[in-house]
Length: 227
Image (cartoon, rainbow, N blue to C red):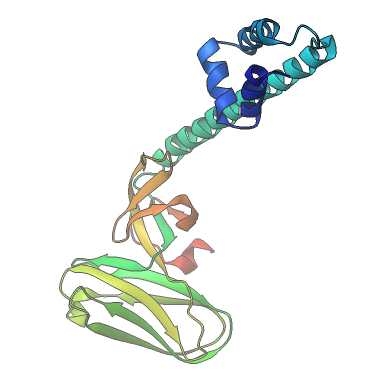
């Protein structure tokens, strides 16, 4: 083949072919451009065979098909995210449990829980403030399973603010803390990902949700959810 068709076909495996298809409107237009260029620049003593044109057209068709599938996949993903926002929007005002590495404390107590894989003689909740000081809430010994805890800023003398949160067990494991909070809002970020605003926790992703506790007049503990 000539330098013209070599340059065009070299882009079939890259984004250049996709740009060419988009610029010409369809793969048929691109193929006709390629065909005319090849006829004008081919060696008269060694013209291309018809099967070469067929192979090139098949390659261009594959590029267009891949572009169409990619576009459909992106559209489907965007639609699913939008539907998720609508569905979660109906849950605004509900209490929920979410995984959290930090907590925003005000005047009201915050309920939480975590799961121990093995019995531990010493379990504690550690809160680290913006000044770097750490407050340790001793929970004592616990068997394997779910352990509930409460953070009461007034009883602990903790000023309002944001605190880093982690669980410490004598076994050396670091359980994931879950906090109970009320869903305040749902939105899509710049990348199209669903973001939830949870009272006392802040913004989290859908993967941080462990369960919904529903709307209730009073505060439900994690154990009541399973009742």
